[in-house]
Image 1 (spheres, rainbow, N blue to C red):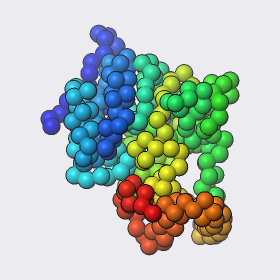
Image 2: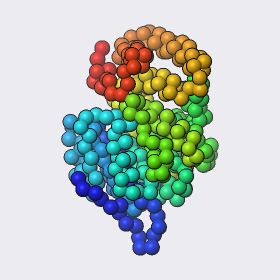
Image 3: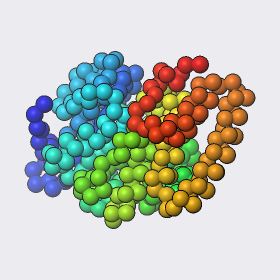
Image 4: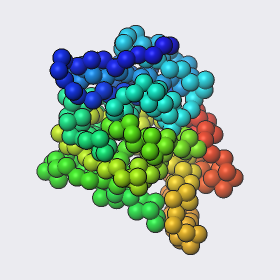
Length: 319
């Protein structure tokens, strides 16, 4: 597909051009609501870039039908969120967009969220919105907050907490979800692309640390609101065997990659393996064989050096 210029805003407007990168993989079950809300977004100076990760359910064609002005880039196989986003990011960098919006296709968007994010952020600021559960608009659905690199833990997040005064104030963050994030294009030029060895989960945590180290700022904008259909692409629900596997494997990789020293990684490893034994016991008591399998395979595959795409949702549902 040939090059596309960003949509032009109102005459005289100097609002930044935004490339909206959406990775799709077999999203037929939920993309209707997503596409309908994206079509209503009021920010004109943007271009939607859909990266399809070799879907087999017809969702790629359906997205193109629902959003006919989009750029559709087809990956040769399922590259995960890291590899898929990198395809879209490269396209946006080549096309010269000022900002790149990384956006999940299991979201439902408010009409003004993008206008508010653009107004909120400057050329050195990565901005993330308030993300609420689609099924319960009273609760926050995002791990945006701080990160304890000693133990690989998110901290001071609003996830699962009721929306209210504490979640309605802007704040600086150390990490956030790429469920929805507005990023200056220069941040990808300076900090590089996502590490595709993660495949999915924790790749944004790794990348944001690099971006902050190069002098960018990460800010939470509570006025911009997005709704999230939690983990729709990984089987549904907060924790699935698929997510458990990749989160387990990738957390080890994330902390090892960013650890200050061998000593601190050894401390983390002792803590991590001890807590995994507790989780393993809980799964065993519940006779949840898929979760037991996911946890054990996640640990083993990290130590085997098996990174990138290794297991699919269907494989981890097997008992």
